[in-house]
Length: 494
Figure (tube, rainbow, N blue to C red):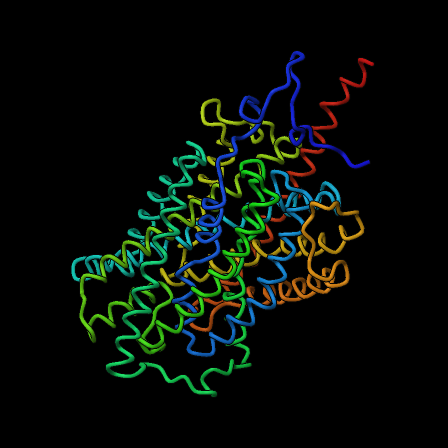
């Protein structure tokens, strides 16, 4: 009989009294409904910086978007829907990996996912900083290559996101919801104004069969990993299973609708940018707002530039806050399981949030803000942090897809939402996800062609990832020894 997490039982007995979810001090509050979860998936699943990155690569990125959606997002979404339906507990990926392969795999999947957000935060906040300069491009434009500005902006916004999430999801979710809504306006602006420019002057980019065909040159294939990475994030909601209202029903529908939204925004947004501005003139740090600014020069409506710049920055700060909220639940659950110090499993006495995990993640994120910048340019720091994020972020997907295959042998109740076609199709879907994930990890170890110091970039990406894995393994075994030593005196009493 599988182990039962006492926190998943309907009531927790204390002194002969059965406590409800709302009364249990050890249980987070269920505050996220369908709308909140859909907007959460939107803000974690859509990153406007990837629209800029894709457009900078030209029209062939549209085909790569479609391939990434089919080969990675679809297998991931189907796996998450079934696994979260089977095991709708707080912890998501951690719970699934642990159930399939044991404690060590569960801990390492959670550890690598958690640590992947350490370089993620400065990367996404650098993008937000680069875009906010367009609010007053004439006065602030000289800061576009100024490292201290990017560092200070990242520190301030990371602090804000951390504080809001410590105050609870019922407060922090408004930052996520606002950020999700803030994404739509810039995308709508670039699509509408691109259509106006297309009608008046024709496209700035040629959409021919040749330009739409992805290049198989090695340096171009490296780029694919970033667009595959852009479709990650649909697993985040499952980390907060005990804070979602009716998770078995809410998660699948929110994920399905968000999936269509994510694909639409990426593909149509990329087309809109390429219609407005040639790919050769785009920057991966400022591409979308650049496209809007360039289109304004052609069709007018200059007021849209500062508005779009502010909203793009807000949406990315919100994305950082959303990931901060979701992944903090992983060390929280691991702390309850005693693989991490017990403080990680503690809830804030007032706001019932995993405040220790949030603060630790904030402190280490600050360290990465400075480490990523060391010895390179602003763009070089952004590329290194993006690549390192991809590697550590995708290792947990290896566990997820492998767990999807392994757990097909367990019986599924009538309430479980299965992959269409049952076990055979589920295995095929998971294998496709495994192959795509492995390819993405390999490609992410290779530095960008325009990186000035390639050996240093490789050392940062591969060495930094290896160090994070080694620290995780050490923490696990230290936690194991601590748990055993704690139980020994108790056993002696009997």
